Amino acid sequence: MGSYLTLNGQNIHSDCFRCNKCKNLIKGEYIEYLRKYYHTACYQSTFGLKCDVCHKTIDGHYYSDVWGNKSHTHHNGNKTVFCFYCNRILSSSTSKGSQIKDGKQICGFCLETIVNTNIKIKKVEKSILILLSLVGFKQIPHDVSIELVEQSKLNKLANDYSNNIQGLASTEYRNSFTTSSIKHTIYILNNLPEVVFKGVLAHEYIHIWVRENQVKLSLQEEEGLCNLGSYLIYKNDPTPFGGNLLKQMEFNPDIIYGDGYRKMKDKLKLLNWKKLIEKVK
Ligand SMILES: [Zn+2]
Ligand SMILES: [Zn+2]
Ligand SMILES: [Zn+2]
Ligand SMILES: [Zn+2]
Image 1 (tube, helix red, strand yellow):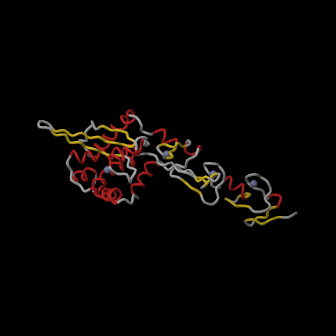
Image 2 (cartoon, rainbow, N blue to C red):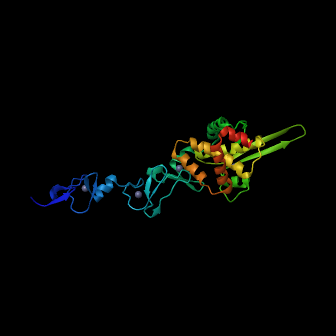
Image 3 (cartoon, rainbow, N blue to C red):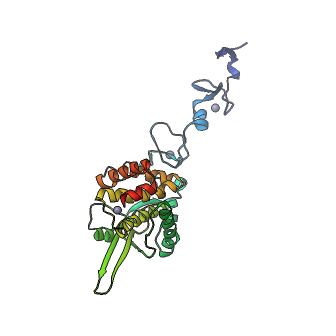
């Protein structure tokens, strides 16, 4: 006896119509999920989207990052911020906090890998040379000096104040009556996360390869070829960071760096590394 409801063709006592989560009676609104019934709030807290920053339920607009973090668009009136380099949602729970470095907000994960000493350079430079030589960029000198510099100095060296460039390969040709020599220096922005640093270094090493082999290319072709070096690094990165950097290159609207990269990448797809290198040489 008593009141009952009909759900999915079954009669259920009102007294037995209970939430599968909290086991309390359901009187008003409810949600059915996999033939079980829930209070709306109980369903949301069990199956709904959760913010990785404040751990509360998300309904409506939210942000997500390539690392799988989701977040409300704001917390306490402050807009959600992403890591300048790896695109992680910044918070103590998603990114090991954040820090301002050279005016950029970067996450704790990136901070752990930043390249800011010669010891760290030494740790990665050899692996880049090996990787490049494996695909066919032979004869890149092993004694290229690599210098870490701040943004203002880098812009000055490159004579470029419009872009925040990250690397530059400079070559000095010295001639005297008896000898001639070439000295290469690669300048790289200080405090780059390791994977970004490696991408920049591979790019600049290919500039040096071009000069050493006196390869004649247009500016667009040369920058495109050099970006294939970064492509090689990012593609080998096992984290979403590499994929994100690849995407940035793929969608770069710049005529020289973006179009150059896309054209060279198409050539690489058509040929292979060895044949491409032979062809440009
Ligand atoms: Zn409930
Ligand atoms: Zn939140
Ligand atoms: Zn980061
Ligand atoms: Zn370049």
